[in-house]
Image (cartoon, rainbow, N blue to C red; front, side):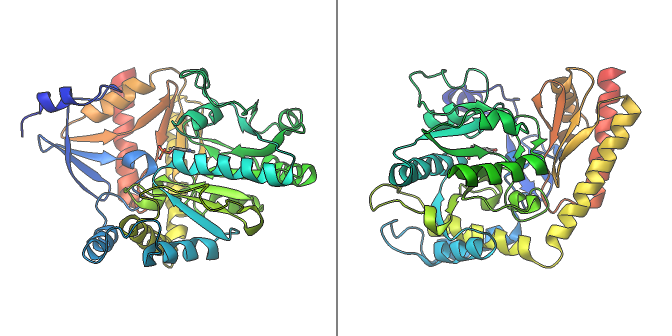
Length: 396
Ligand SMILES: *Cc1c(COP(=O)(O)O)cnc(C)c1O
C-alpha cells in the first residue's frame, strides 16, 4: 500500500508522527501499510486493555450494532445499565455517568465537586491538584493538569486549581482554605512519568479530606480497569474516595469513559449534566465485555504476574546498562534512564527490522510501558530482548 500523502496533508498537523499507517492489529501486534509488524507496548496509550481487535470486544460491538446503536441519552438503554451495575458492585461508588473521553469524565468530576461545594460548603470551588498531574485537554482539565504552562496556554482559562506536590501531605494542607472543595489526583501519575502516590500519602489525604469536609477525587483514567493489577488502583491503598473517573482501558479501544460517585455526592440536578453520545449502547456494551474479561478467574492475577515479570526484566536491563531503576504498578511501568536519549531509543526500537517495537518516552530520560493486560510471558521477554538491542544500537 502507498503512503497517502494527500490524506496526511488533509489532517491537522498537531503532533510529529512517523510516515507510516497502521492497517491491522491483533493482540500485542500491529501491522503497517508496508506489511511490517510491530510488538506494541503502547496499545493506544494504555487503551487497548485486551490488545488489538480482541474477539470479546468485536463480538460485543457486532451484536449491539445489530440490535440498537443509539436511542438517545434521554432514554435508558440496557448495556449502560449493565455496565453501571458492574462498576458499582466492584467499587465503593453508587452512581455512574458515562462519557466519551477521560477529559470529559474529569470535567464532570469538576462540575460535580463544584455543585457539591455550592450545596454543602458555601460555594467552595477550588480543587487542589498535583504538580505534573495530567487530567486532559479541555480548558478546565488543562488548568487542572500540572504541566508547566498548561494553565495559561489558551488563556483566559478556568481558575481554581492550586497545585500541591505529589506525596507531600503538608503541601496539600497548606493550600486548603474556605474555598477548597476537593483534592484530585492520579494514584499513579501516568503522563507525568509513572510516579505512584505512596500509601502514606493516599491514606493521609483520605484522613485530611475527611477532617476538612472536602472531597477526595481519584482520576483513574489511566490506572483504572485492571491496569495496575487490581480493578481500580485506589483499592491497593485501603481507602475509599468520593469520586472516581475512568477512561482509556474501560473501552478496550473505543471512546468510553465514566464519572463515578458515592450516593451522597451525586448531586447533579436535572439539566446540569449530559451529552449526546453519553452512555450509548455500543460503547457501553464493549465496556461490559471488557469488564467481564478482566473479572474472569485468574485474569487480574495474571496482570500482577506479568507486571512482576516486566518489573524484574526492566530492573535487570537497567542494572546491565547502569540506569536508574524502574517504577510503576502492575502493567503501567517506566524505566528510568541515565541520559536524555529516550526518544532515540523509541525511534530505534520502532525502526528495528524485521519486526519493530513500539514504546513511549513521556520524558526525555524515561521509557513507559503500557502493554495489553493479556500480554504473554513470551511477548514481555521478546520486548526486553528488542529493547536491549535498541539500547545497544543507540549507546553503542
Ligand atoms: C489520558 C488521561 C486523561 C485524558 O483522557 P482523554 O480520553 O484523552 O480525554 C485524563 N487523565 C488521565 C490520568 C489520563 O491518563
